[in-house]
Amino acid sequence: MKGQKRSANDIHAALTDDILHEILLRLPEKSVFSFILVSKRWLRVICSSSFRKDYHARWRINFHLLGFFVCNHLYLGRSKHGIRRPPSERALHLLSTCEEGDNLLVSGIPKQLGYFIDSSNGLLLFGRHPMTYSVWNPITKQLCRLPQPQRYYKSLCIAFFSVTEECFDDIIHYKVIRARCDCRRDEVNTVSIETFSSVTGTWKHYTLTCSSTFALRPWAVATVLSGVIYWFATQGNLAVYDPRLGDRRIVLLKLPDGKISQDYDECVLGEAPDGLLQYGQSSTSGMEIWVLEREGNSFSSNMQSQNRWNLRYKLSFKAMWKQNPDCAKNSKEAQILSFLPQNSEYVFIRAGWNIFLFHLKSRRLTLIPYLGRDSSIQWDDSQVMPYFRPSWPRSCLCP
Image 1 (cartoon, rainbow, N blue to C red):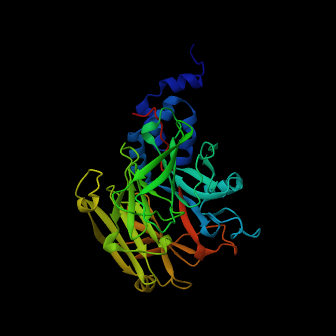
Image 2: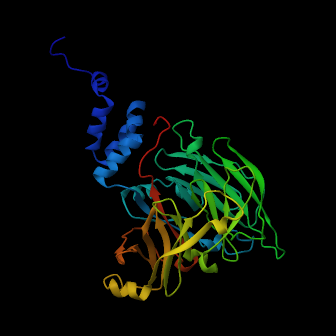
Image 3: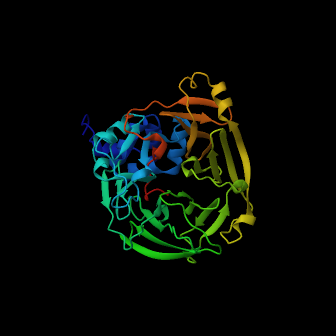
């Protein structure tokens, strides 16, 4: 009928995917994210790789830092009569850098789940080693309390990663791997692990074998790149494990120059934009950034001969403070914290309670303002880990 108002359903039907694409490109990110709930069609358009690429090109958005979790290693794996956290010190510290980080703390949910362990694709892994773990999605507010593992590990290290190839619905699936860290003096070439899959909802036990004797560093969190797991091991090695292969092997990869750091909080791994593994290590004097150049694509026992480390950056902290006098006013001994996701040109650096973003090429420091610092944080015994929200939502409806 002439003059009759069109319903919301009529307007929705009249919008082609191309028109919807162009309209959403002009809206701020917060609004776009809220529209994924309108319908499956809107979800498919927003999560498509073409829209994500166009939106990033228009708005220059690549990642979103919500804050830094502070993990005190003194309380991990403590014995019955070991060091206990005093009541004055909070179990969970989040140094919030934005409103979303503030909301994360206000929600109160993380405080109920123990200590922060790791994050992957926006998911958060909390728990109390060695038997209690929970995964929380701050975006969907979905909380999953994992069943108790089958085996007790007095000392262990963790790997936590999302599994996109096992996405059968709009839920982000993930795996948690617990690896036993043997503190025995006799040398071994095997390691016991348990893997939890969100698809099956169960833990499975495996024994991994290596051609050489080795030991994993306890309480370390793995770096996972393209499904391959990298753990710091003893004697200046990385222990490399690809769970997608059926042979259950661990391969050792020597760190550059055979470096052996006893303070492994100052050794970090990351991913370069080209997908290569990068390694950073800092000492009291300065910092080095190395990249692992691939000369072979296969995962094999001779990985060391198929790859080589190249030194990409080397700098002196003294020169860094001299070049950035405004940041050096309250400077203390610095240490590397983390790489940015898929970005080899920036690293986070901590000096005292100050956290900086450092551009390796220009050697410029930028102070990161945050909320949440208090006197109970024991900086020297803690690891500071950045938490990023996914740069863009994903869906299995997308091509």
